[in-house]
Length: 412
Image (spheres, rainbow, N blue to C red):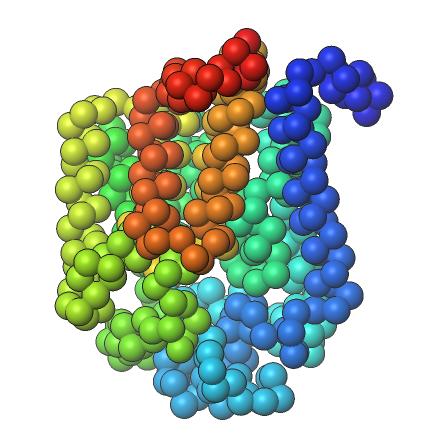
């Protein structure tokens, strides 16, 4: 099979060859990074986002769930886990309590051992995702390359957050959506509430387009109620206020995120209205989201399942407020569906390869490079959304290439 792939590769033009090598290279980078992280871990004691979930689980396991959102308690447990007290940047647990429950088995192992085990689980699940992508593409190896070359995933391998679970969750939402199992869609969307900032956007966008809204809302109500019930059982009756106040209080560079590192609309809001305070900025963010969602609904009253889930993901990242670059891993599904559209149409010309390459480079450059003006990061997501709603019209790229006098070289 590999020999056949290599024969096909030799017949490709220079653009397709370069793009193929580009994606293979970054796939190997991800695998190499996994090996490095497994052997050496990251930093002193593995001080990455994984430690926040390990810490949250440790607090619950110690029977102190009522203090889960107490800063003093978190710093005490964080210090005992790491063996030193962080001062410059303090990583805190900001998710809903049920997310920490998933990590309680990890607390039976030493922190670094647990990190390695979770790293292996992540890589196995990413491999499962690549396999599923292959099945939907009807091709071999391409699905794996899409997954492991996706730069947010490469970054997420270091941080070991819940990214892979959210990708699988959105993938199941997509499969349920195209099969018109709307109760199941709602049930799965309710689970996204573990990341409340993303859940608000996801739930509303799908609500606008799903016809059988009663089934959809019933599903959301069931799973979201279960999450809330578990949260109250862990933290107690003060859960809502303790959680909201803690999230607002930790929306600062000291606690893991500077505004220029967010891959959402927040940097743009901070640039023009940073003096208003966190609460007002969050309100403005969701007002902007509501206006954008309603305008898109008016302009595009009907969307296919592929376009709807892609739009939902892009808007969830753009308006999710506190969304770091490596948390945008769910965009791999958007990237996959873009590839799948042209694979099924057998329209894999040079322009498609060039568009694929530009989107991948753009994702890396706009998301990772922190020296960029803040306005550019959300603009990249807005561009991708417009490109999506245009039906992935490659004429945009053809015209751009022709204007640069390289159209003849790249376009079939």
